[in-house]
Amino acid sequence: MYRLYGFNTPNVKKVLYVLSELNVPYEFEKVDLAKGEQKGKYASKLPAGKVPVLQHDDELLFESATICRYLASVENSPLYPADKLKRARVEQWMDYFTNHLGRWLTTLFFEYGIKSFLNLGAPDDKACEEANKFIAMQAKTVDDHLAKNKFLTGNNLSIADLFAYAYVETAPIAKVDLSLYPHLKRWAGEIAQLPSVKKINAQNI
Image (cartoon, rainbow, N blue to C red; front, side):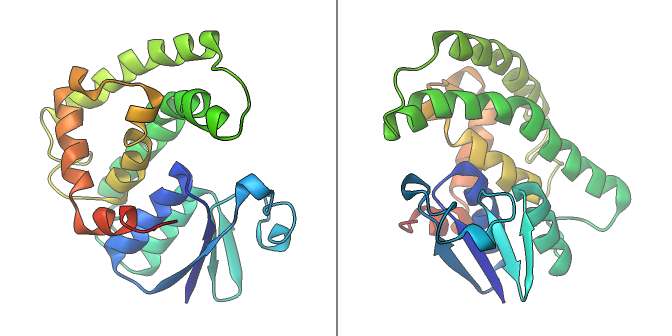
């Protein structure tokens, strides 16, 4: 049995989208970060002091990318192909979003969203300016790629798409205009309409 410890954050939603697309049974246990439960009630379950954490039987895993790959591997899912090159392409795009485009979207999500939610003050103009500069370049890279591909790795949905979408769906809060990137916007709209994604977003997590 899978149990996921998490809160309503992009990193947690990556895993929820994969669990939902895999259509496997799991339990979700909310860790209220606003109340500091990651340092109290759930400290023993969170080895790195953060969410998400996946519990599979008696084992614990943290880091969202690792969890997504593990789940798809355990379930022998084509979302994470066995072919070495195809698998590398999945990992390539997961790494790209983690280290590049997703990183800067996360910066803006924090500045415009999390800061307000936690009453941490006004957005840092310098941080926002830097993030927007890199997003303009990196979103174009993804947009150009998606002009020739239905999904990030070609014609088939993979965990890379679900993983990346959890970053891209923050665009309204991050104040990023996806209409500047029509192919990226098309892709995001199609991922948003997947039954697995709609199911998660209909839940109150």
